[in-house]
Image (tube, rainbow, N blue to C red; front, side):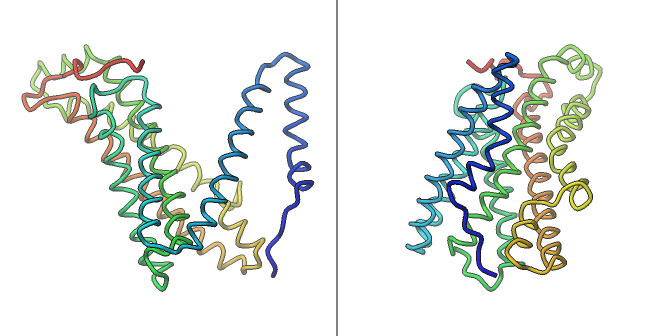
Length: 266
């Protein structure tokens, strides 16, 4: 089956519902049309630029360039995790709090993916490595940022209760256990919802693309299951590492709460 080629008219037709919604927003003074327009312009510009860049990288087929591009993606994700936190660590440690879980979880799970479904492909083939890093990185970034934002906010809000538990003899792990559980739950909600609704409520993107490309639906389902398992594992690892590092950052070896290490994001 030949690939589907989209024309400019096809894209404009796909945007029809968005134009109608934006027009109604303007007419009814709902106010989201401006933000929607900016988001669409950014999305189009970014995807076109990435498409052109990936075309060049794929043509080079250089392991060094592939690793360099993957590193840039991970650095950008680290910055996004940092920028989404209302409260953060002081100094450069703020980047390590989100960056280390992102790097470890993404690298580990991408390695598993390349050793399973793509074991016959070159590990640093950009056509395989970069898309895998991108989709895994997105899940890890979202899960990690949600978990950290929840936990750092809860530590500040529940300060008195935490200090009371510590004063009664609880160690830092026990005193912050409920907060960590809540943070982990919030971080994994998107991944769990995605898995729970796959197939019955939605046809995930990879499966839809493969079916449109002519693959047998059952084979497409197998690939989607593999991907969902990888994403769930990546999100889980990211959340576990992030909450553990967060716990270590807001307490010390003497099991004292150290909120002086935190600051409001400017």
